[in-house]
Image 1 (cartoon, one colour):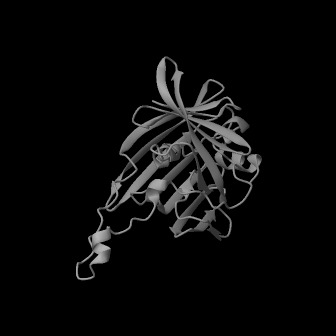
Image 2 (spheres, rainbow, N blue to C red; image 1 turned 30 degrees about the horizontal axis):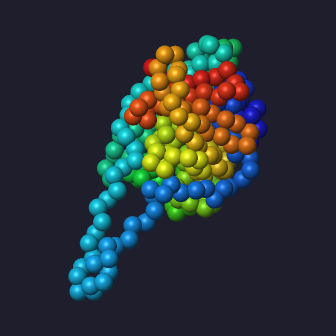
Image 3 (cartoon, rainbow, N blue to C red; image 1 turned 180 degrees about the vertical axis):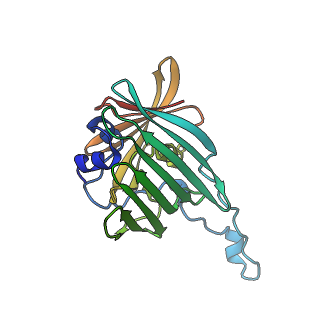
Length: 265
């Protein structure tokens, strides 16, 4: 996916296209790494040794996600060009992350992106939907099963397009174009107990692009007089900085190579 094609879809200039991770993962599908906290549980030794005793069912793991509701402002070269409102909350046995982004770049048409991502409590994606309205209207639905993503794309005045992508793990990270609360989810899925460098298989649904992203805790950093935790995310072509508060909430997202930022209001 070229940056120009992505920018045309989202109605953004190249600076914000970089921040949106457009064309991020050109190296193809990656196997990805699993966080140690996501490993399978085994039964206790006594239950396995005594066949007459019914094995105990281990308690469900606590969710790695957290309830959030907020608003981000999108800034390019010091100028506000858009906003995103989002909410992440339980929905039945799963979690639902939904958001709406409006982009108002200078000298270009306004565009909007709406999204809904259903996740298991451990962050594994189940279903994703997005709708984009700009020069053309487009939408898609993605169903995740095991390590496979099945995408059904619909673009105005075009035939529907179906694609299936295979990953090496069901723990796929969804990072879509101009959907910045997905990075708030990334901050939750990072294993803060293990820390260090962690690699995730990634899907950019609007581009139908798979790949990998590596994330590492870079420690505390002073940002505007406030101490925030810096989580650095990188690919071979791009580096992003995620600034988090003490509860690992995303406060700011920036790309050092560009003049674009996303800031929590």
